Image (cartoon, rainbow, N blue to C red; front, side):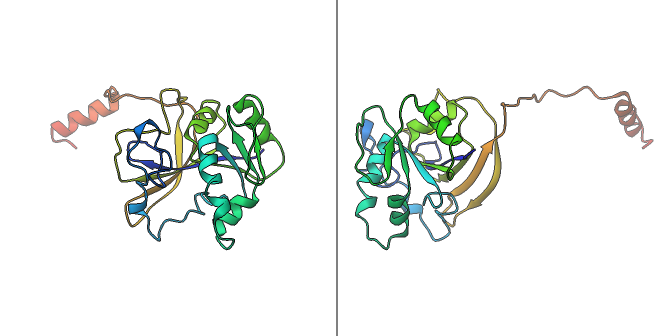
Length: 222
C-alpha cells in the first residue's frame, strides 16, 4: 500500500493560500500572497519535508496543478526541483479540467476519494500532495492521509483558505519529528493517531492511603 503524504506551508492561523507570490492565488480578494518568503533561510530543507517530490508521484488539486504547470516546465533544465516535477507522474483532481498539458499528468476519474484509494492500492512510489487545500480536505475527511509535513510560519494572516475547516474529520495526530528554522518557522511532521481523546481537570478523589499520608504530614508525623 502506498503512503499518501501531505506537505504544505501554513500561517500561524492555518492559512495556506498563496505562500509563493502575490499572483499565485488572489481568489477571494486575498491580499497577502508571498507571505512565506521573508522567513526563508538555509536551515529549511524542502527535500526533507517532501516539497521537492523526490522519489514520489504528485497528487494535486486543480489550483495547485495550474500554478505548477504555469511555472515548472519553463525553468532551466539544471533546476533540480523542476527536473523532478517535470519527469514524475502527476495525478490531478479536478471537476472542471478536461485535458492536461503538463508532461506525465493525468486526471483522476470518478469520485476523488475512491480514485485515490485505488491509487494508493496500486503499485508505485508514495504519493505526495503539495498545497492543494481543497483536495487535502477531501482526503482527510476520507481518512486517506498517512503523514502531514506542516511548515508553520510566524505570521497571522486573518483571512484566506485554511488547511482544516468545518468539514474536517475529528482525529488525533502524533508528532514524529520537528525542527525550528533560524527565522522561527516550525517544521513539524505528524501522523494520524486514532480518535480524539478527551479528559478532565477535575480532581480525582484521593485513596485511603493518600488521605492517611496527608493526615500524618499535617500532624508532623511524616
